[in-house]
Image 1: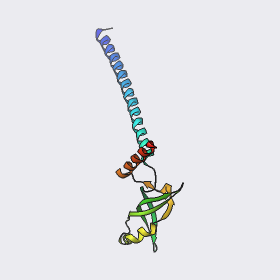
Image 2: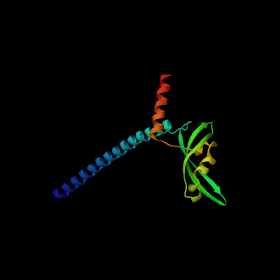
Image 3: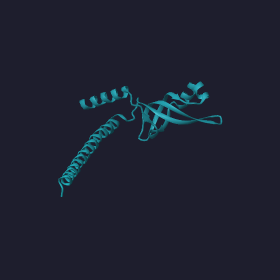
Image 4: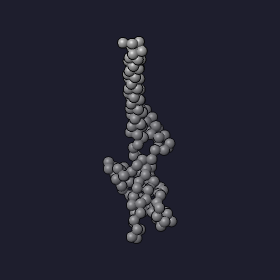
Length: 146
């Protein structure tokens, strides 16, 4: 064997070893990334479990399909929860959004139609605003003092 061939073989073996080291390093980085994302996901789940609950006084979004004459239209309501049972919530409409002209021009009529209505709790999507988060923290403090 010539010296050039031996040098080429040694360089090839060296590059394969370097490639293997880089692959192992990338696998470690991927594993670390997955572990760190698990932490972030767990924190997000814990936050949602803590704050994403329905309770009286809380606000939520509720989508409903109304009918005016022969025309059906979707309405997205912002509602306040007045009381709760295991599966139902009594709500009061605070505001709403729709594309239907008649409903936009008769705001109070639509709001009154929805007031004091019992709806399925599963249809409500809690609104996470600073007021709700603050209230949750206060409730937690009050519970820890008892």
